[in-house]
Length: 387
Image 1 (spheres, rainbow, N blue to C red):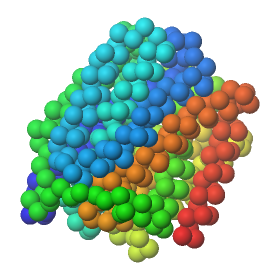
Image 2 (image 1 turned 120 degrees about the horizontal axis):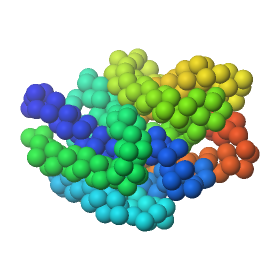
Image 3 (image 1 turned 45 degrees about the vertical axis):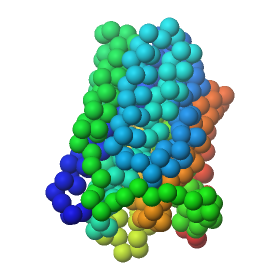
């Protein structure tokens, strides 16, 4: 029954819900020029906005993982997406920066269930021969949300003000919640399983979990850096217009969407296994971030090409990574293992944007931020290649 055609319905609805739940948060980077102007923010404060939605998942992801191993993804994910929608709707009345931060904290609590829940549902419906491709398509929902948000939200903010973007984000998230609860089903042979504390502790000592955590932490830092710095870098360093910079940001997200699918599909057929694809992405990111610290990065054309390269590998890595994580975990603890790995990633998701923004403010330029990402990625590559 796992080969049933309904698995494609599951993949479609999981991808749609991921896209819908991530829509507003992924659009913050594209609105960076508008938010800095309207709310009078510096780069550090802008980075904190990106981090706010990622703070509560530090605790929420492991909890969501345990719930997913015990209960149907249909309700765990659906209710989480509803929380995102309600928070954004309430946030449209936010009077300013601090209120917006609080709203994004609540959004993060709801989003905690969407990422591991959708991944677990797709992994359970697809066997190993197609799991990488399916996971890549599903994980493409995140950058796809960024593409759609980058196309829509800056225009909305210009025409109707930044609060209007929260209303639209709420409606999009609501549609994702309704779709998941309406169409999701468990595979016929799957039953909820109860995790044990002993297994949870043992997972942290496994070599595969060390590779997952180290590579995930490094690469989500790169993803966060692209979110907070791309538009500002292109506008301030290469002197492109804000509109052109947003279009490049759209191209970066499109490249990431394509990368998540292509790299995950490649991992289905890679003779050295899925993690070899992750190592390739690490190497590619080192090249790209290092290039931005050189005169190459000051050329508008070259910088745009480098950012698209970083989008493909620096966002696309997640497809083979999450497939590797799902397959490496004990079958009865997939939800918890995914939640644990993603929770550790959240440390970098929370810290990277404001840290990179602060480093940019303190140094008066972007070179130090790109150099830091290049060094961290190189260290990760060296360490995990030996595990």
